[in-house]
View 1: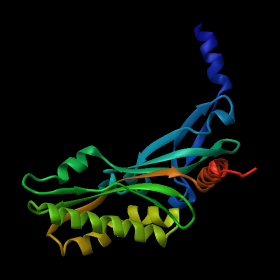
View 2 (view 1 turned 180 degrees about the vertical axis):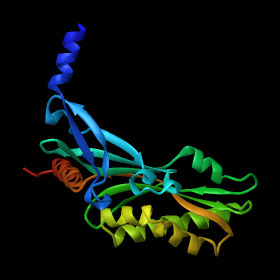
View 3 (view 1 turned 180 degrees about the horizontal axis):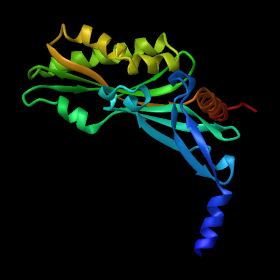
Length: 213
């Protein structure tokens, strides 16, 4: 392709400002280039919590957003992932201590299915029964949080550290802890997707029912 063709192709494209959801104060996430608005839908953009808030101490937290709607020159997003950086997670681990992890799938009160992966770091090596008890606390606290929160408020509890603090408060009575974090939160299904899954499951069940003739 000639330089003139490339230049003409770029001229036909336009830049769209990408904004975070209202939950994150419609902060500007960046720009994306496309010829048509529908080409922007589905694109993802990752930033850090520090970049959104201006707090450099939060740069160890990555947030990923997915474009779901486009205006004349603006692209709107939904939140889909929270994740701590690998460097930060490595810095938490101490030799001779326990790292207790869990992976928990829950559904919020407004029918968003999410996968939550908390981690607890002990001050010294815990035995297997203590690790199991700490993991049980993490599972119970995550389920309890989902049962009383919408997706947005659940995300807020992760970002603000409230869920980690709740796990820490209970789990430290089992064995001394140095830190509790949520290392990852992922949006797995939206309400309409869960509804479609349930409808499909009902259809399958109906087909499996034997009918006497």
